[in-house]
Image 1 (cartoon, helix red, strand yellow):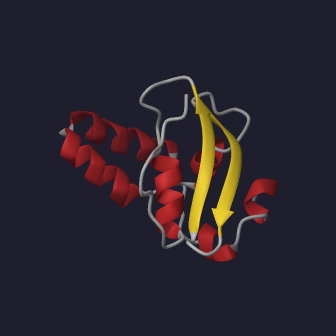
Image 2 (cartoon, rainbow, N blue to C red):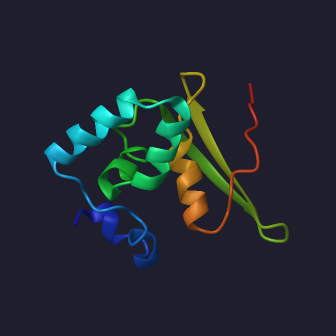
Image 3 (tube, rainbow, N blue to C red):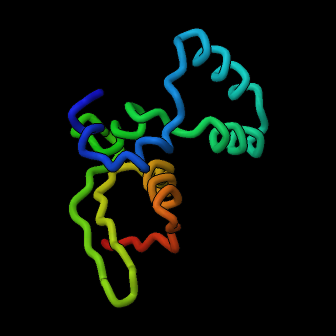
Length: 113
């Protein structure tokens, strides 16, 4: 287990999918590439996230976006995550998945220029 994984709560770690072997990943990817867009989305949701893949999105090696800060309004229960990104649209799957595992959901994305 990596250091970053030991800092996450156990209930959250349990929500990750088991790591696939190289052959299992190749087989899954082959099926995914031949699938329709709707089927791809369904396959991705069923497969879930492996811990190492999800953690990549929050590491310094992530090239799509960087997390700049968090805010939380206790009375309303609204949490803000500030991301800086270069690409449009940027991949929000890791953030949306984390929110869903915590019993929350992404209500919207606000672009600040």
